[in-house]
Length: 58
View (cartoon, rainbow, N blue to C red):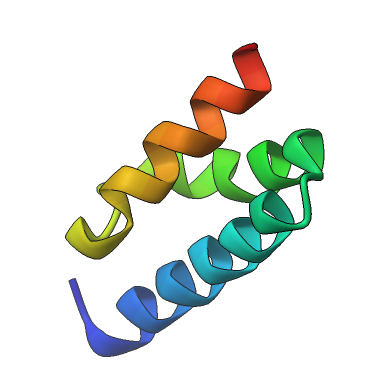
């Protein structure tokens, strides 16, 4: 994975994490969905992804 791709994924997951912290679970999931579905998520965001998906499904 090149630096630009990794940077874009990290920015998308950071935005999703911020929405999750603001308790906007649907928008957090929608923001993270493309990154989660299309490719490998950076390891540092695995836990954030798990919580975003859990809250969205709950």
